Length: 509
Image 1 (cartoon, rainbow, N blue to C red):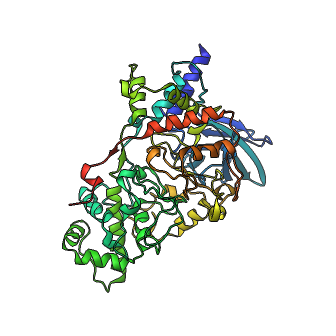
Image 2: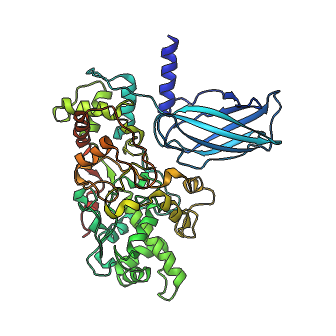
Image 3: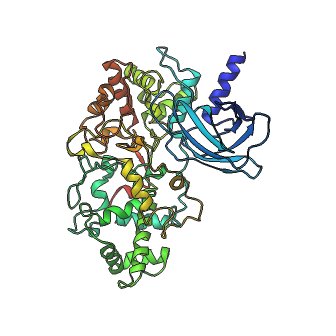
């Protein structure tokens, strides 16, 4: 009975349904300290954690004012913490640990380096960020597998998180205005490019090209914007930390819209409908001679576009309807029943000893929204791309970031930016994990469109090519070619309709 109870508690912890009780205590490696970590986490992975840490000497005397650093990584992969946690004094005399975030399932080890009174020692703690799931040949799903299926099911997807940097993020008037801006090719130097040029609704808001094309050819493949509101980082390298900051970039890019903020505000000023909509949301448009006003107005237009994009969300697919039926204990409708190959692919996808896909493609959006090096920058001119290593530098320097003058966020609410990892070998050559929803409509794949077909992209994980920048996180998987093809069969069940106001999927009247 006891092993079953412990297994249940582990599953509840992983699902965020039980917060545990008490703290775990460790003796430091050299025996100088006793370290207690109250790692009670409601969401073990993909959420910022705030824990209490206490440190005493071997005789129980509290250690105050210690210098403590925390690092960590997975035990079964070469993958470090995606954030830069900080430790500060706690009001009760202990310490507060902030900014820990687990971006994949599996076992994590945290290392605490403690220095006090000339004595330095280390303590380690292990955290299980998920339930390990093993592939099974049985027709029935196990309890652990059902826990994982529920976590991937769209019914577990909450509303998009609020964006405190954008005061009109959820204003219907801003979304209507942003809809018009999104489809407006007047916001380009040649009058032929709009946001929708690279984000076509019929192609799941991508463009079907290897590299996106605006007034010139870009170096990146256009990612879908469906569900982008759930990600704290935008672009493949995460160089923007909000949707509105992202929306501003292409307008002034020489190869995308090819315009300037003066051009954009000039269009809005001359269009009486745009002027009316803008002023209802933000107040009067600035004079064209007011440089500071132009900057603020340009950011406001980005916020309107973001309000529109926040309404573009995923809808249930065959996979979601299948899982909903399985969770309810009923037989799926005929059209929603999985084939033998689809079931086999799903089992391998969620298995912790075979596909291991949910280490990065987890949650209802099938992405951890973090950055990984999988050796994908191996083709042509893309071979030297630095990815997140450069992206985080751009995000921190961006005048439109969460801490910038145009952000509506109160001071202290920029946790993702504050705890972002700024340096480290694992950032080199790392790119953001894309959602796997709508894959059949979003080819070519990867950040530079390296793979034309889904099969080609999947073979990347079979072949495990060496990275040309940094070190790949991929390892050889104990799988047959047939199992890789079964994963492809499963992934095709993730296509479906888009959840958005119907008129938002078409050009405005």
